Image (cartoon, helix red, strand yellow):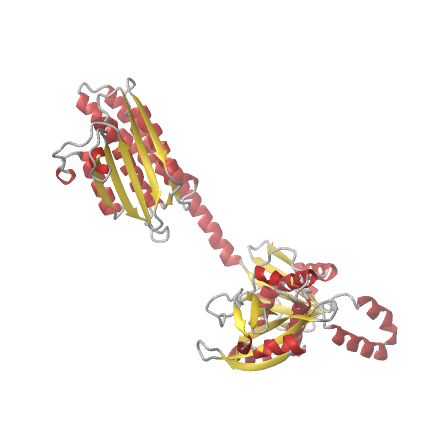
Length: 518
């Protein structure tokens, strides 16, 4: 419901409360009626407010987008204006301006407790579907007419969210005596699969499954919509939704007078049933296949998470073996290379640790940087040094593939800053700055170390770390890489500060197009 409905000048608080009750049943009404349902109120002398738009799930909507909150000129909906100003319902055919397709409109005025018209309910459906609905059995058409009346009066009570009625769902109608008066072809086929007769009309609802009779009875006794998901012993999973139906007051009064004349002995029983329901609409959805697919996906997801967990453990085991090997090396250069390999392996293990928790959840790059910093301080930082490593910037979430490449880039840049920029210094600082640019991410790693050599050419460097960084940024992340010294970082101004800044920028990639890392 559009919040502006509370600002309509002709509506009181009680009127608005009534319209919110009307809104509660519009989506279910739209599904069963196979029509777009719009709730209109008078905004001013020349405009109508579409306070709510309920598009059907059982058929394609005639609207491209939801029109809730849209203001229409009164001349665009003359039938609605007539209902609001003259209290007259109506039906007409009109052309949709966007496509020229014929549409059937039905309009009903909505009255408040003082019998004043406060809004109008518009049903719009295409001509073909309208003709199909008209050709269906009379009990179903009567049930839909009662449903429209209940929607107009705000009598559809849905205490909890329920499933939407889909095009492949079955539907049947029972009367006040719980006898089946109508059953759609889809519902007939659903019940035929469990061995029931093809024609159940005239049979009590108990002739179906026991759960049908129990659910219908509960809904009619409680006088509100109820839904139940039931799984049978043979693995079938059905969702049943029962909506109690009430005839319009005038129809009930006519029926009561007729029954009193014909069957005087039922007068007392009829009087007792007057405030109760006059039937029920039962919607049946077979979720067996969908539930089986969900279970299969859950099993596969659990298996993939277990694989990521084992990969993480294996990578950590390899890193531990390399640490032992490094301690036994006599060459400082060999120890350095093995230490670098340990850090790269641990950076990848962090990614698999995140994926072992939830493979579909995007990974927070800020948290990832903190984990990599913790590893680097334990492995790469000399105990005699005091190096402060900080992360600044917002939380940025990326899919697993980009997160893996980003983790390796951060690890290499951090190791490069510690081993080269801050080599031989008793203390220093490294800052990792994250920037979310909308469709792009910018990553800056800056240290206050020795700075870049005057003849530094990253493209010509033989350093394995720089080659890894360049490959990851340009090939995997499809981004840009730039190295800057502190002297030129401030728009070329001369500075006594030393240090290096590395700027990495790359576009975000959607999780839908992200290749699997498993």
